[in-house]
Length: 330
Ligand SMILES: [Zn+2]
Image: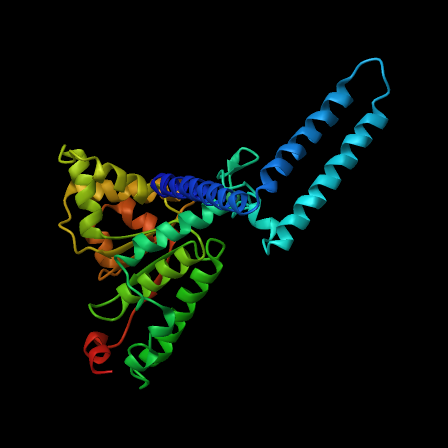
């Protein structure tokens, strides 16, 4: 599983804020308690001294420290009990005066055994889903995808009904998202005419995979190749396009929507090949949607691109009639 460096930075910022808020809340609560219970400060200081005594006794040379350490330990326990009693009598839960991090694994530092903690992973997943939701809203869910948009009538050219064929496509997409990244089909190629639900279904896959915590990036072909061109031709003063390229290349799942809708120049052909090649070499997954079948792909792109798509992607043909009208009607 990979993380977007930008999301990691945001997650670390949220953890730092969480630590600071917790400390401030604790300090203010402690001050309130001390004001209400003047004995509390004296007890806390005596508890601190008993610990110092125990350490000093343990470090004393030439004498058996056992008895002195034991005495200091008893004193400490007695003081702790007094403190607990004092707080409980005042109706205060002693746990409220302890510094308890939200993540017990890393203590809200973000690191555990020199690696990013799973709580950072969870925060990154939240950031990723929030970013994705700005492009693909809540309607991109498998449950919102209805097979009733496709005709149940047998079609000789398809050797089946559009509904049955689309039921298979839907099942593959669902399983792919569910088993990601271990589904036997590493990459999917969704193709067919306009308005048959390719963008909808590829968006459902994107959201479902992101919800499972994988770094998922969605881009239309137009936006993706524009970012490559901006970087190549020096039109990226803010560095945003360069950052987008790192996302396209580094994410766990890249959903490339509407391949073929872009203006296909030799530069685009070469950028596409490099992107495909790099992602396949690094064993990163891709879902592509397109109006182009493989014959059209061979005509429009280089033989290398066509061979990558044919060799590494499972083709899923979309059939039926334009569902956009029916979705509005329904
Ligand atoms: Zn943690």
